[in-house]
Image: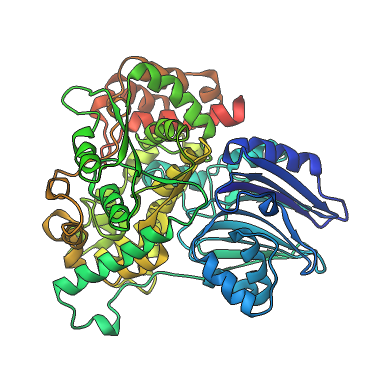
Length: 591
């Protein structure tokens, strides 16, 4: 787990080492254990290292294999690297290190762009071919590892974080009106390749890109998700589905123990992270460190779920750590959290993950987390209505979108309003082959778009801001592919995630499985009061906000007058959504 960056030029000028150094320095938190820059003519690569696999200096990056003429910078973890190393050794490759970075180099030399098909893990990497000058960059199937880029007629730059690109300078920071529509309507999700800034893009998941020395750029999607049963599952009974659910999850959790440092768990007290703890215990992990966070309650909305995480900690005798945060600590941490965000992320639990990660990083460097289960096993409330609906798009929009296009026009200054891009995007995604029923269409877009650009991005962003690696077993691509074969009714039955719940009964206590659905609660950002309301008001009434002119004053005033009456269908604060965007822009563009 690290931070990577680089520059490729095609204007006969050498790469700007100073800019690459600035980008590398901005990612210090992603990798405090080492850094390096490699410059070769028109190409320069930068790296920050967090030592997880092969702690020796032999695994330092940028890694150069002079014999093969290849150099790499890499962020992530390839969980099947020992098996791949054995395969490559049998092909005649010789290794000088013990980790997964060198395996990527050899795999690229052996299989070319198809190397990504061999990797089980999370990754974003860039490989430079010395002899051709070509640079090959790739991102994992589920987009767990980020990769941002910017380009003009002379150069291409990439980095693990958007603030890192900004540190390098020369980025067009104008607001992208299409991305603004996505942010405001599509639950703050901006699908790739766009970001809120016109000059910054992100490499889509399951995609690789080739940048040639003459400036020509090509990209290809190497993996996709298709729904429907395999032929060998046609006669499956419920018990068979349960058996396979446990089989794939056991493998995924076990794979994510590959490390040369201890691995803990972020334990929210919900089904998903509890199952991860149970499976790790079942696999023989003792003295497992687990971590939970709680906040002050607001009104009758409780701010912690300790009673459930305590059940799991006691049942499996983990080394459990409770972190209770009062609002006095939350507010300053929120400002830090926003400064570390690669993109504006509005979910209430951003600051929770940020603060939890800061605490966890005092104890260890790697954790497993339960993100992804709701999207792949249908745990959200908008999935049951999709099961037999007539109009998939209308049903999905009614349940998931934060506002309709009429309200968007009322909220945003007319200069930014053109088309209903978010609705058009969802409609286009729903038309793609590979998911025929309305619920499968919803599950696919949530898995391949919403999940990646909301919860997964959030977890990577805030754990890495604490120099902490988060591993997500539910997003093992084999687990995701299996979940897409499970019949929809076995997922949404009895409130959702039925098959996962039934499988979990063999591993964890029923009281955690049958509890009311919860979330990572930060009530103060749903019901903006006191200092949090002041923060929102100051941001939206600032001179920077007025000059930017994103929002209509009448709409802002309406939200400020009664913030608790303006809640989205997904129970988010519309006021906080506007405020967070402006706070992010002020932190990254105006500061």
